[in-house]
Length: 235
Ligand SMILES: Cc1cc2nc3c(=O)[nH]c(=O)nc-3n(C[C@H](O)[C@H](O)[C@H](O)COP(=O)(O)O)c2cc1C
Image (cartoon, rainbow, N blue to C red; front, side, top):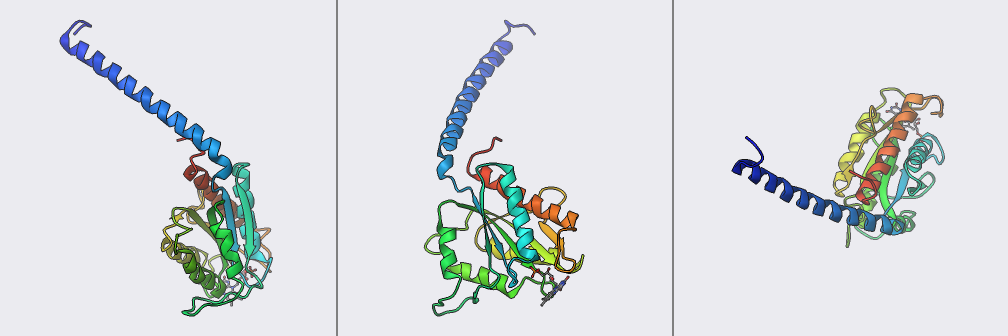
């Protein structure tokens, strides 16, 4: 078959049409991505890390902090804030209004800059801490009139005293709860697929390199998804 056969001419026409259509789509994609980049200042690029140990500044807070630092390292546009719940008075859900330390936190999540969440809990009898559960229950108030968590990524880190101290169970408990907020559940980058799993030895996680790495990989993954959802990464 040569150039002048009817079949060849038809193929050439189709190829031209395909090229023009593809070029048009590329132009639209380019203008969308540049306009999204122009909006980057207003994009929800803030990742909030919530440390749910009643002991302020201890191993859970440090694990969440490690995840947040790794999130910032992904891209200079990522901002982070640690909410250490240690020492705060936060009750679980109540059918009547409660005036406690949860209420002032709500504005952090309704802020348009809020783009992703990292939750950290210590292992208490292989389950999340009561403080963590209370925090999540109170987030119920953040679903109406607008679900501020919907379509935002959440990663989880868990710290226990033993290597197999319930970390993976806790991550899954928290992930299951956050599905109820229509969040996008993310783990960590390979090999920390589920999230951050840390072991504290005498209240210290600084020597748990594997665990710290898993926390960092979780923070990085949350940041990558935040950027992607904001239309600020290619692909
Ligand atoms: C009430 C309680 C229950 C605990 N249960 C477990 C457990 O089931 N498995 C485990 O490995 N460590 C357990 N631990 C140890 C904590 O998970 C560990 O000390 C963790 O680092 C505490 O976090 P924090 O330093 O942020 O307070 C428990 C500690 C407490 C106080």
